[in-house]
Structure formats: structure tokens, C-alpha cells
Image (tube, rainbow, N blue to C red; front, side, top):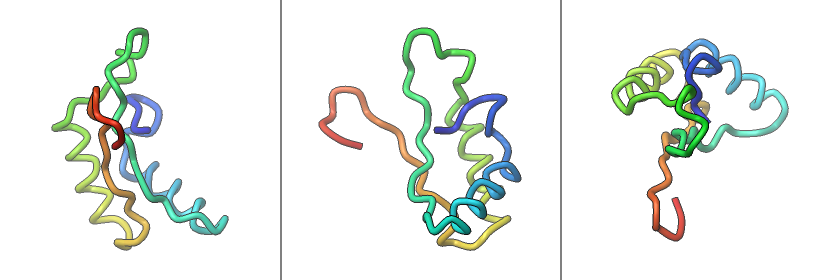
Length: 78
């Protein structure tokens, strides 16, 4: 999950992707935070998330860039 002031930096996400890969795990999804009560301080706008994502794509290989995903309320799956 992409969280403000936790991992909202493309360099941090690259390091995380690299470490996951070294552990034998492919980073498959990077979820955008659901708008839930009590978590608004972690929320990142769609525009900012897309900017971070594009910068991550420029920093690392395609298979180490997780898919950006958002859950849509009321839908059965992502």
C-alpha cells in the first residue's frame, strides 16, 4: 500500500522491490490506500501517486515495477 510519509518516494519503493526480489518475491501490486476513517493522514492523491509511479518506472526494470491498483468500493474484487 502506498502511504504518505512512509513509502511515497520512488527510491524507497525501488529499494523495497529490490529486497523483495532478492527474497524470491516479485512485487506484483502497489495498492492505493482506500479512503477509510482514521487513515486520511496516509492518503496520497491520484496525481501524486501517478507521479511517484512514473518515477519508479524510470528507476527500475519492468518486472520489478508493481502494478498500480485501487480497490473500487462495492466491486467484488480489485
